[in-house]
Image (cartoon, rainbow, N blue to C red):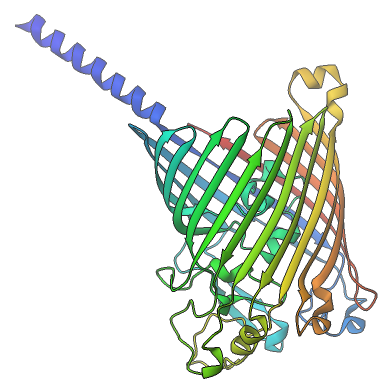
Length: 425
């Protein structure tokens, strides 16, 4: 009897260990995070673009920041079913902030990008039928543009995410929807059906950047949209990608318009994007070009600007600013791994990239208010280093120079950061 009991106990223990091992293999835990120190050698006055002559000799200012820290969880249920989620803390906080806005006469204004204490950037359930066919539903990343698809800090050289795409598009762009994706030989595709953006949240300098966020406990879906991305890997070490988006944006809010002039306003937003990456011969080269067009931009500008600027009764999330008819962003960066020429460091898999980056972007590329917002047209140059002591950790440093037209003051800065990307389990 004793032997039987001991035998049963041993069997149970073995089964428990087997279950634990299976669970460990099925469960994944990871994430990424960034810590940054910046010194900006230009004015941080809210009116520095409206009155540049008054602020050309203002002192420099410094900042410490935690741009993005995330916890990623995944679980494989078996039989092709899996789950993934990403919880993100932006700037070490809750996505609630106080800012000074030039269009608010420099008053302090509380901004809430999304209700809640943390941002749940991803939560999806997926059914995989094969490598070529997967269906994912929930809160998903919209892979339009290079930065949204490759937004982890080890996937770009600059200390902060590339400015162009992250200024004019939601970044990281995530919305509730359904995705169909897969890979066929050298091709990867993804097609998405999503809730539409909210034109009430569009702005002059930000274009549609805030359109995917919601101050409510849910995301409105009076309008729908679609996104697509195609990647090609036919040439070793080279990825070529095209992505796009189309959807209506007007009246995707709780408060409907009551004026006949807005009856036919749709706010159709169309985005086309091309990006690439070359990772070969100890070089990494990345580039992107994006163009976006917003229909009915003039009507949307009138509608958004009509909200009272100081009404306590009107809790609208509108930025009350004009928005462009079109926006553009282009960028290219190249880095060479100098440690590839040092045998000892190369054998230890350490890397040191010397890089340069150039960006051009304009959140007010065309439209009725283009001339009043010429400072939205920016050129940015950056040079720096990325040091990888191990694959998952990078130490970054860069000097950047944001250049405007002669009417405005240029903006040099120095940024230093440390970041990681990795899976712990």
